[in-house]
Length: 340
Picture 1 (cartoon, helix red, strand yellow):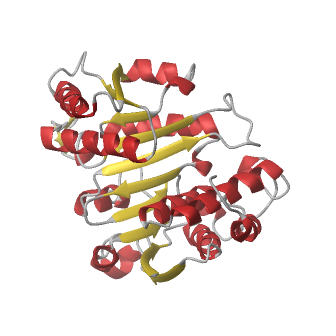
Picture 2 (picture 1 turned 60 degrees about the horizontal axis):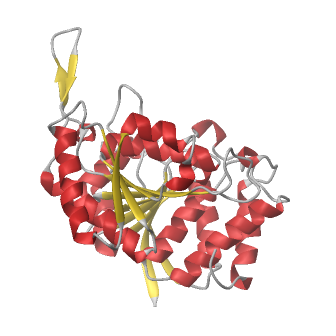
């Protein structure tokens, strides 16, 4: 079977990372046809938008995309392409695994978390306006529909992947209506899984403290959009940083897989960027496509090369370039059998 995948290289270091990821994914022997489309800053002059209609059409047609990092201006300029993709394509579930990698020096050695984040509403809806010249207001929307949908996704993910517990994270002690509705929806869904998946809830500030004290007692974390963004970066920090953090955005009709780090334009073209996160995002994509064995080989190859320590990217303490690391991982992929 040939998998046709939309490939969005992105900005800055994105094209180099995309080439590296393609090298590794093609080493699995899985057949791909890559439909390359461009999004990001460079598209504004040509299309008047960083997200041309052709990109959306390609993803809708192929139903799966692999995307490099895209620049998001801070405080001004165009709106986040990442957020626009998620909302336009209704990619309601953001999935961010955080798993310790042997060979990386981190405070903990046994972290194995999965962050499941609602991806379409909350403060990320972008409903904000000025209130006079010296104040601004942002509106937080939480709905029962979106909260129930993401909660059910988290519990079904736990069942499908042999996970034991789901922890809903909220601030319902203060935001009693919005976060209260999210928590109520999660509790309602949890009743359908009693006896199969353990359920608990934590206030978000307490959750952050506990993750840096005892992350090993947590499993699948279920969060609304803003808290999910923050906590998923915290979890990435526990296992080595954003450079090793893969991401998936899943909807009913499409899925986009991407690293969550920035586009780092000052390093573009220097062959120094770490492609680990995009390679591991490609492994998540393989699982989504039903190519589980290939995904496990990619994950095992990445972990093996990093643990060996001779061909490791600069941000992980080594000196290997982008393509050298990808080549080392790709060379291991065909020889590996079994789980990562």
